[in-house]
Image (cartoon, rainbow, N blue to C red; front, side, top):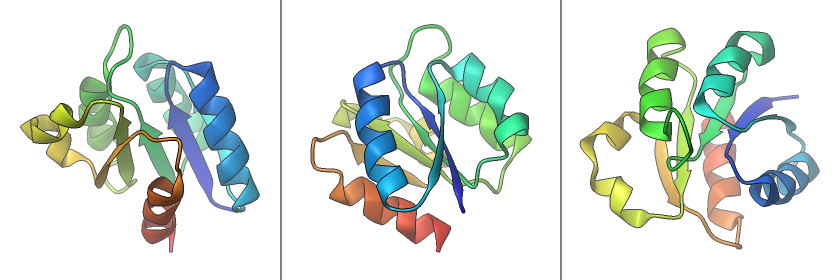
Length: 116
């Protein structure tokens, strides 16, 4: 079973994404901050990371940079409510950029693509 590390500071996102992704057959682990994600990187050994950008403390762009330094081959999907971050050159280090929506079809398709 493929492992996903979901990094987002919103509990409602964790509940929604966890339910959908577990139903699709993935093992989902959670982190509420960028710092927690870095701590869990070695423990969970995720096959893919879904990462929010706008979080307190270490934001998703900084977490992305540090994740790619530690585990450069792990795909990272940036998932943000703000489309303007897509223009930020730092976000281009991600493997995919998705704008948050209540329709998770785009996210699930991206996860499937990177874990196939």
